[in-house]
Image (cartoon, rainbow, N blue to C red; front, side):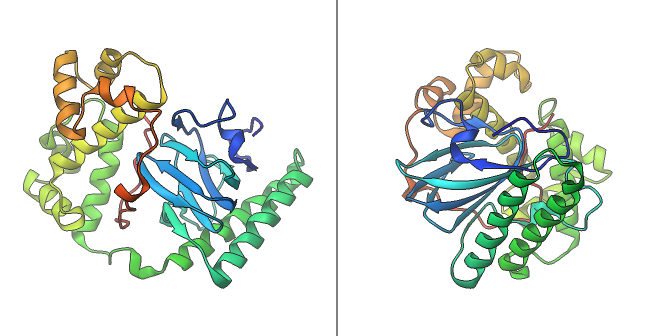
Length: 288
């Protein structure tokens, strides 16, 4: 996949996302992606959730997530864009589910739109006048995917959902600096009890668990997709002492940071991990 500017839409194949022929280990994504599987059978690992893939499988990935696709003959069309691409259009790409198996008329419609987008992106590459066309094609595709998902998949608007959504946004901005629920409550102008109640209502987990899970996820991404020293990863995430980071990671993930990194080239069993139902919150994207 070629270089692109801040507003460009680029299409390509799975192999364009990795520097080598095989997905030896996960890669950290630097852009928003839609991946439509067009041939073969295999699996995708998106933030360490193993997802079965076959023709009609659609993946929605965010910048900062860890992705690995496995399958000897797994082919897919990839649509890639960045934060400013959809600015000004009435579409929210975060309403699209991370994983969906399309079928029937829905699959036919999405294949048609992805194919046309890919054709136009290639035919009009570098043509400034084509940007509006591609932006609107992408917006229509995302709106269709949102409608396919159905309104019943997203919780009804309520006070707890709004508080949880704001809390997740603050966690994205601050998880590298603090894991204290009190700090986030102060930023949001509410009580710790209110935050905990909102998190329990939406996810079944406490506010502290939500924060710690976000930190553990980022640690897992960096351990799996980079060669950064473990102690340095710990410091980046607010653990000056490597032993404290090791204890935290082992408690959250179940294995030590070193063991997790050593196993990063091993595929995840698809049967062990199932897609979580969507919640009314932004996907963790790893942006600092």
